[in-house]
Image (cartoon, rainbow, N blue to C red; front, side, top):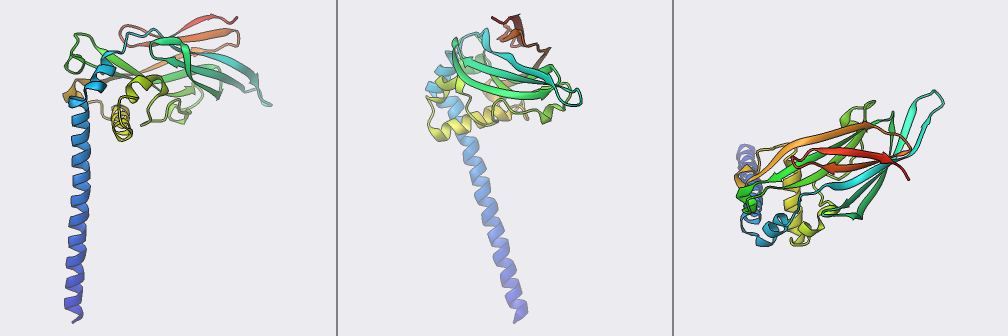
Length: 225
């Protein structure tokens, strides 16, 4: 009797495992189908990305405090400001970071949309800030500038044409390119490269971040007024 009950329990567990696997498989299928439909059939999204312009200024950083602790180690507190896409006079985010040392690294992900997607004869790109760190710490120990998977404020024009679930799906897929650059190549979208720029920061300077025509991010330094 116990043998029969054991076999029955085993069959039930096996059936449950098959059902669970099927549900997970369907979830993956529909998720993949959704991102496919979003990137190939959503005209509003295509137009919003096509409307992106070649950007120059995307924000700036200044030193708010630079001092040494009780054992003489230098620490730098910076204020990091992001500006709106296409409008360098509109501030969309402001953060403060305290880091050891004075050589500060700014890490971004460059995501390009090719002719296959934009269909206008010109490439478009997104610039996603990832994290900030100093030469005295490991990059993965640096605080995040943007939360991976979330919609950056500076690309509100893209986010607003998508429903909430579409928005989450789109930005998660874009951020995933940092780990899987080939994921969306079939749609003419590639994470071309990561861009890290660094500089020795001083309190009397303004570090304005700009983007070159090739997608390289660099700071333009000027005297602080």
